[in-house]
Image (cartoon, rainbow, N blue to C red; front, side):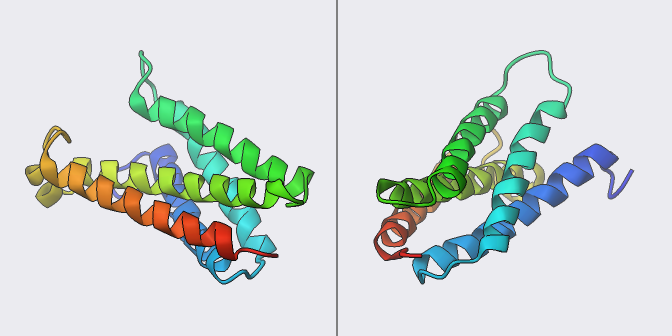
Length: 158
């Protein structure tokens, strides 16, 4: 047990944090039209591992986290196709950007869910995640990603 977590949970969380941090670097790169191939590969790989490893937690039913993981893996497949298969040519450039932004957003969405579940002060504000503080936080983050995504599509010209 590490920090009260199983080794699998710790690895999942560590990879998730790495996916978000590398995703932030990639997002910044998109906004300034700078290509960072290694960071992009790290982001896509760690995000895929995070999404896939979420299925490793024992559950006897399909949960919303499973649905988010499936969506994330589909979006990542589109991003990988646009980047590595179509080499960002023509429409594949903006398709890649949108897919990368959605992938990072889904990671951050899950992070916010986890924070509201695990951090006592946040949990007290929204114990069922149906309360206004949770909805306002998720709405503000979604809006921020829509705006960042808009500018990333306009600016990214590798």
